Structure formats: C-alpha cells, structure tokens
Length: 259
Ligand SMILES: NC(=O)c1ccc[n+]([C@@H]2O[C@H](COP(=O)([O-])OP(=O)(O)OC[C@H]3O[C@@H](n4cnc5c(N)ncnc54)[C@H](OP(=O)(O)O)[C@@H]3O)[C@@H](O)[C@H]2O)c1
Image (cartoon, rainbow, N blue to C red; front, side):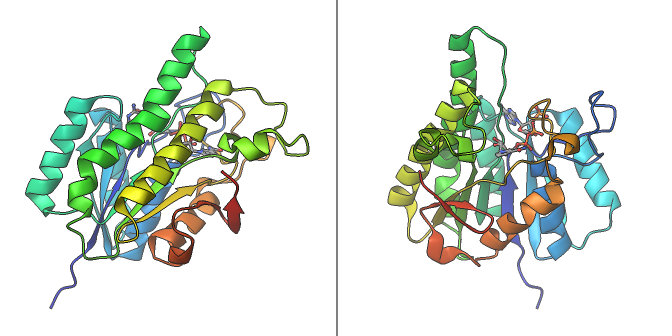
C-alpha cells in the first residue's frame, strides 16, 4: 500500500535567478526555495510552494520538478499580507488535500524604504501579522492532521529582546528597528500559537542564521553569509520531529535563544 505523503506549506518559496541582482546570488538561492528542495529530496513530502507571484512561483516549481527529486511540489498563490489570497489558498488546500501537516511561515522582509512608519507597517504586516493570519486560516486544516503537525516560524536572533540589550552580541550596533521589532512580535505570535494549538500541534520559532539570500544587500558569501543548503538542514530536522521536546521555544541550529 502506498504511504500517504506529508503535506507541507512553505510561504515565500522564492526562486532567485542569477540575474535577479547584480550581487552574487546562486541560482536556486533563498531559504524558502531550499526548504522545498530539501523536503522533496526526502521523498515523503508533498510540498505546497507558496508564492505571491505566479511567474516566480511557476519558475521555482518547474526548476524543482526538473531535478527529478522523489517528493512532489505544487504552486500555491499566497501573499501573506493579502487576506483574499490566504483564504483562497486555504480553501484550495482543503478541497485538494483535506488537511495540512506542516506549516512553515518563511516569507519575510527586512529593509524597506523610509519613512519609518512605512517601514514598521510593512515589516509588521509581513513578518508578524502575516504568520498570525496565515496560521489562523490554516489552523483548522492542521488540526485535521494525524502526522505530527507542526508550525514553524522563521525568525532571527536580532528579534530577541534579551539579546538586543547585550552589547557583547554580534550585530549589537545594527539598528533595523522595523525588522527587530517585527520579529520580536513574531515571537509573541509563536507563544500564542503554542498556547492555542499545542501540544497536539508543535510550534517553533527558528533562526536559520546569517544566510545568503535576497533579504538584504549584505547577505552574501563575502560578508560571511552561509549557503541556504547549510542553513536549512536543522529546520528539516525540526520538521522530521527530532526536536519535538523543544516545542514552544525559539530554536537555532544547535540550541535555544532567549525570547
Ligand atoms: N537570510 C538570513 O540571513 C536570515 C536570517 C534570519 C532569518 N531569516 C528569515 O528567513 C526568512 C526567509 O528569508 P530569506 O533570507 O530567504 O529572504 P528572501 O530571499 O528575501 O526571501 C523572502 C521570501 O519571502 C517572500 N515574501 C516577501 N513578502 C511576501 C508576501 N507579502 N507574501 C508572500 N511572500 C512574501 C519573498 O517573495 P518575493 O520573491 O515575491 O519577494 C521571498 O520568497 C525570512 O522570514 C527572514 O526573516 C533570514
């Protein structure tokens, strides 16, 4: 009898082409895309690649399908700041799959254009409100899962309030208040989700570490950013249940950050 695949939604599965910037991005870079690729390589997952752009999403899905990985993938149009697309996406997943096993709230933004009010509004909308609203829409489908359901929120160490006040922390001088504050808000969203959905649904915040991506101009190898392939491996371990005993916490690759 064929084993049923675990259904995973990854928001923000961006596909970076080498000409998407003058900087040295790898083709297929970006954390969301890499999560999808590594899950497909396992063979036991059907991945819903969330993208707000049908063009970029199609390109990502075509690239992944051309790699003959044992898992499967489909495009799900979803803008985490747009309620209509979120509701449509949840209705589609309910119709096609009847449940969701793993939700990875990966979509995020960092630097936006001043004024500060706009930067704060945009960062909160995408990084904190987005994961809250997406999880609210997909929560009933996660509750139908019998395959050890999980919610993973991609955060960042710079969103830790405890670390923010510690001058010995790397990046202490980095201001980026919109990014820091929106990720701190995501931590409260995570805690609320854990209280609401746990322990049946395991909820985590996770920091992938400084990674090559399109999130900012400094996220390149020259500045010490690591490849997404490396950053994503510990997140796959979480998805596979290896850190279930740390649910409800803010994890990094080898331990726990303070909130
Ligand atoms: N890179 C790092 O060093 C690092 C470190 C810690 C945490 N993180 C976190 O990791 C996550 C992924 O970031 P990344 O580094 O891979 O950045 P990235 O290359 O800029 O990718 C961000 C992804 O989010 C998508 N996105 C942005 N706004 C969206 C929206 N409203 N609706 C749907 N998708 C949206 C982007 O889609 P488009 O292509 O349509 O813009 C893109 O697919 C973020 O949450 C980030 O905060 C990254």
